[in-house]
Length: 346
Image (cartoon, rainbow, N blue to C red):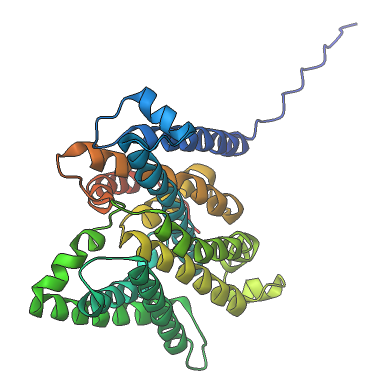
């Protein structure tokens, strides 16, 4: 009689994607804490580490305390807030349009903010202030309302294609108007040239407090949308069958994008590639589930903006705007991602 030994049961396959998601969250949070701390100690001024640390603990009234408390701290916090806003708005616009390479600026928000700042600089005075930030945000909100109003007219309602085409057309018109003003009045261009390049230089707490309520409201809306965005990715008809309301989802998404991207642009100027690159890269790492992409964009995008800002501080004697650094770094990285890491469908 031959005894047959039972075959060992193969272990259950490890959920590689779940482990990768947890790893991305852990690494992202660790890197964010590290670059926030580094941003406080790195700058164009050669300040000793001990002096910076002491300035963070107490205000003795020295010049080091002034630089750290009045400039580096608000600049770092604003970079975190603006980066998170750009990352979230990019994730939402890519989900709504079902286009993994969509940019939050295609709804005309950046062009609206830029045009408003151009007119504000022409009328209100020589330097950007918190008043200009509020005016820029108002311009972004107005542009988004026009895009949504025109893009939803007709029996088909507000399809993603109509919204994108309307936003692109309005953005071209507003950009042309802005260029006409700056070309005919060079002093206006001189007043806004650092802002128009996407810069965090010189920003203080008044700018942060001016845009923080709008970014907070947009963040809350964005974090409530992932389940609806997952349903929307299957098509409007399927989303309705699953109990979702595509029209309401798109309206809420446009509102979140407007608040987030409009406030970020008002505070730091138009910064390219953050909102485009971060969700696209995350989709390749953690899959198309918006329940992971949206909150992770909130973590990863500030890391990139903080690193770009620190590179800009150290790269030249005169600081390079963060928007210039993200353009130099973001374009090759995005090309590399699209060639070597196949993006997942939405």
